[in-house]
Image 1 (cartoon, rainbow, N blue to C red):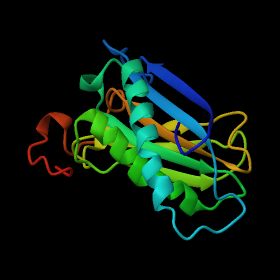
Image 2: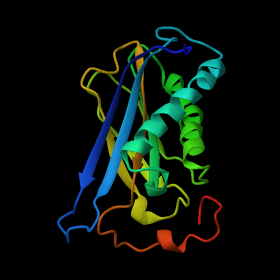
Image 3: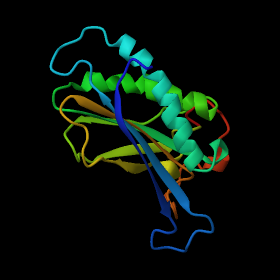
Image 4: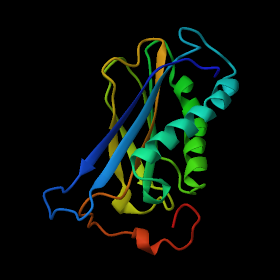
Length: 193
C-alpha cells in the first residue's frame, strides 16, 4: 500500500496525421497520463514535504510505464514533460514535489535521458485545462520538439486533491521548419546539444 491515496487515473493519446501540410507517413502520438491524489496537506502548512515527494517516485515510474506502453515502447519516445494541478485548498509547493518524483520516475523508465523535463503547474479546480510543455528527451535545444499536451479532467482536482501528470510524444511538431538543432544532429549528449 502506498502512502498516498489515488482516487483515479486517466490516460489519453492523440493521433496527429497532419497540421494542414502533407499527411505524415506515420502519425505523431501525444499522450498524457494523470493520477488524482488526495493532498495530505490540504488546508494547512506543512514544513517538510520531502517524505511525500519520496513516496511519489513509485507513482512517477508507474505513470511513465503505462504511458510508454500506450505510445509503442521506450524507443518511440522523443519528447516529454510534466504537469501539476493543485486543488484550491493546497499550495503550489504541494505540487512542486512532482518535479523530482515525476521527472525522475520518467527518466528512470526511459533510460536516463539528460534533457530537462519541462513543466507547468497551477492551482485550479475540476476541469482546469493545463497546457504542459514538451521538449526533446536528449537535448533541450531541439526546437522541432517544443510543443504542448493538454492535461484536463472533468472532475478533478477537487479542493483537497492534486492531479499529477506526465506527457510524452513520439516526435516533434508535424512539418517543423523553423531551424535550430535537428534531432538527428544531437552530438554533445549533455542534455542541451
